[in-house]
Length: 347
Image (cartoon, rainbow, N blue to C red):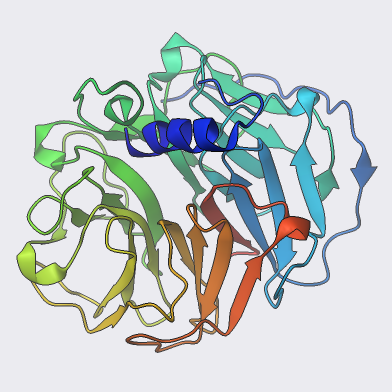
């Protein structure tokens, strides 16, 4: 498992303290432990999941430099423990995937920061979560989780996508899933939607370049043991352990590639062993362990760099060895192994 093994080495080197290392709904728990209730944000926010300091932080999209977040979810009451994915629903509630001792999806109330208890928590044997990784919400409020026991246990189990009904809470079964040999999923990681409701999945394979890393597209409403309608994969794609995926307003597809420190971009409708139309790569880019990627309404590109403890932003259409137009980094940011991004409201 890529992140856990690297984090362990990271923790030992820096001597970090504490780095040890579907219908089914129930009643929604009463929110508790609020530290601060903010008014609805007047600007679009970028939410970041920080793996090694057990926090989720939010920044304005135009944030740049060594800046403090506008808010942070952190503390003992949050129950966060080296979490991964972060996502938001239409109301701004924050969903965080935590694969630690008891795999869970924690839900926190919108615009609330500090040491806050989850208002809902999806966990237990019925959920079928063995190694939850990333999370996104659809327009109906269903929660999609990429599930990979192999990433967390080295078991070699196949990956799948689990979907939970709106308001799910407790030990509940998925509403449905995308799972089975026909899906070709092995290490499902980042997820994204296009404007037609098709689901895009980055299928990352640790240490793999070319033939084993894939970008899959599943048709809107797909469920069960179904084949992807699109499979971008092969040596010409320059995919190398793709961890994040995004789709812009024109349908172009973006992948963050962990092992090559690159962002590869594919034309809308791409399929098969095809070359990217653009590649962001080189010493000027600031890419350093790109773990997640997002695109805003103007098609600007946001990348979470886990190894660099930074967020780098590139203007729409960027290509080659380009410098970011914004870089969020430094001690004030609170960034600590950022592994997931979500923009609210969604572009």
